[in-house]
Length: 134
Image (cartoon, rainbow, N blue to C red; front, side, top):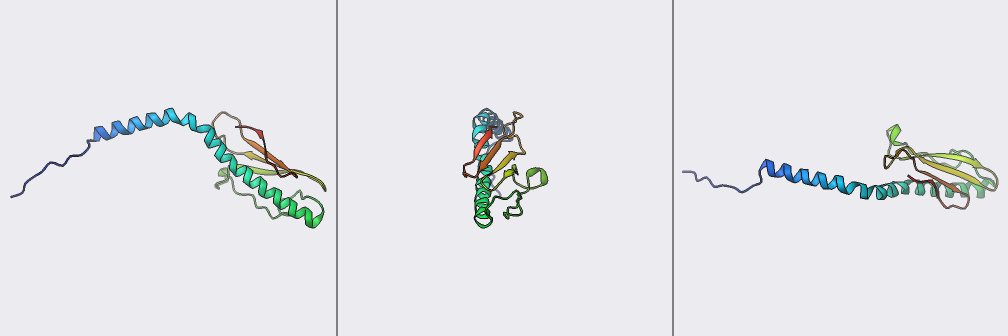
């Protein structure tokens, strides 16, 4: 003879109610995290610009001038999310001479959905500067 015992568990309605409450709390909390998300994604631009600055400095030590071409300094631009990659920024050499250079990183993604795209620049001093804040 089999004895059936009742196992205590949550019902489907209880689980759906808990998930709905968690979803509502996330919707309330998300705007608080948007500046933090934008700041974290901007780290990509700062790191890549610093890397480009180092490559330009090395190139200048060898050739006594800065380069106007990423190929010359051995920088391979990462694929953006638009191209199926993971990079959130597009990089562009704006100017280069014997004494100075300027490189720009422009976001291809609007991080907070306000229509403004983040832009960073770096020059021969090696300090990234935020030109347009997202």
